Amino acid sequence: MTSTRLLQLFLIFLTLNFSACGFHPRGSYAMPLEMKAVYLDGGTPILREQISTQLRNSKSQLTDSRESAGIVIKLFDEQFVRRSVSLSERGKTNEYELLYRLEYEVATPKDATLLPRQPLEVRRDYYNDQQAILARDNEENVLRSEMSQQVVRTLLNQARFALEKYQK
Image (cartoon, rainbow, N blue to C red; front, side, top):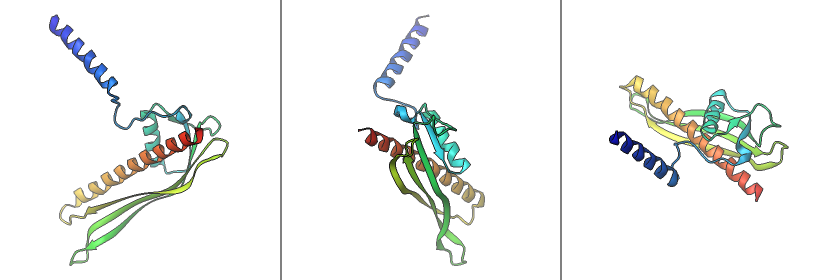
């Protein structure tokens, strides 16, 4: 009985410590009230899903209606590019560079520009091991996913900062 009580007290102590130090789950942000409903104009289904997931983690959501949104993020020219960086003596690629690029603009629902159209790029290089074909494909998929997540975090942070600057 006392060990159960001690465990409960310990868990309460841990919970209070985590909340007092500012701990929050990875990937969640404190979003301003205007970003609780975000309208997304453009973007591929994969990017839209990642933005939606990030917003849900931050207790926000994507909305289908521009009028019900607090902020509008417009996405343009999204593209993934893979290019060879170095070749082996057999002419096979030893190293690739991945480039994920898009342009975005942040506006109010009434189309007042908060952040003018600007590019966002993420680059990664990876070694193309000729012996491990399955690992090579998996590595590229993991890198693409990480790059998309980085773009989403950067995009939402930029939108949040633009909104805070607009409100001042």
